[in-house]
Length: 346
Image 1 (cartoon, one colour):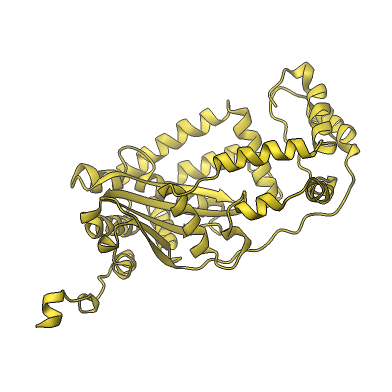
Image 2: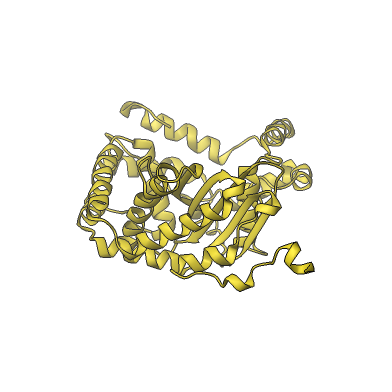
C-alpha cells in the first residue's frame, strides 16, 4: 500500500485484517477460478517455452508445474482447502513487513508488532531445495520463425560476484546497443529480437538469454549467439564496462525514489539472506568492478551448463551439441551430423 505518513497505522490495520481474516468463501473462489482460467495461457509460444524450460531444468520437482496449476487441480480446490492452507502459511513465523518512506523506525516497529499480533505464531514454512538439470528440448511449431532460449543457474553468484554477473548479462543483452543486438541484428540482420535478463522465482535466479529470427537461419543465429557469449566471457571491453557503470549509476540512484521497488528488495533480501543489503555497499561494489571480474562471472555462468529450449519447424531444429561446444570455445564434430538423403542412398 502507498499512503501518507499520518495514515500508516490505519493502512497497517487494514492489511492485517485482510491477511488474518480473509473471506475465502465459495463465491470469491469461483470468481478467482474464472479469472485464472481466462488468464491461463494455452499455446502461446512464449508461455510454452517457459513451461518447457522449467520442466527440463527442474525435472520431477514441484517448480516444474505452472504456479496456477492445471485445469483439474484448479477445479478440485475447495474453500476449506484454502482455509487450511491459510492457517498454516499466514502466521507470525512466516511474516516479514517492509515499510519504506518518511516514517519513524521505532514507531513503525511498535505498530507492526502490535497490529500484526492478531496472527498466530505458527511454524516457519518448509521451503523446498531445488536441483538444476542441464537439458534441452525442441518444441515443434508451424511457423517460419525460430526462437532459442538458454537458461543458466546463477543463484549461487552472490555479493560482488553476483554484481559482476549483472554487468556481464547487461553488456551481453540488457539494452538496445548490447553485444547480442550488435552481432546478431546490426551486423548480420539475423534476428527480430534478442535479450539477456535475470529471472527470480522461489529463491532461485536464472539468467535467460534468447534470440528469435528466421527459421532457415536458426543454426547461424545459434552459432553467433553462443560465440558472442563465449567471447564476452574471455575479455570485457573497457568502454562496454564504463557504459554499464553509467547505466548502473543512473539506475541505482533512481531506485532510491522507487519505494515499492525498495520494499520488494527488502522482502527479497530478508527471505534469501536474512539481512538487508546496504545501498552504499552495492553502489561501491558496482562502481569498483574490474573487467576481469566481469569476464570471470561470465565464465562461471557458462560453466554451469545451460538448459536450452527452442521452438520452430522441426527441420530447422538447432544443433544443441554445437551450441554447447561453442559456449566452451570449441566446435562440435562435423562428422556427427546427419548426412543428406541422397548420400545415404547412394
